[in-house]
Length: 103
Image (cartoon, rainbow, N blue to C red; front, side):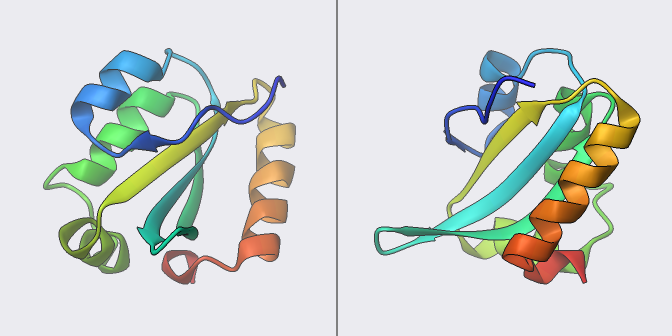
């Protein structure tokens, strides 16, 4: 586990450019004023695919859809290979930030 990526505007193009084929945890956020607010934390064994799914028509989480339609959104990710570590890290992030779309 290295560290969090930079923050990128949440677009398909940026997923293609900046997210390697890897396993990890990610944050979705929006910006209000100068501050960023995390609205969802997730994990995947294929980060580019999962991040792309949130932007597609197959997204079922209405809360995520609402944020993506109404705000300029951003994402960050951290590579974590082992499933146990991803589970623990995701749980810690959710407890820490209490993202609205994870409830």
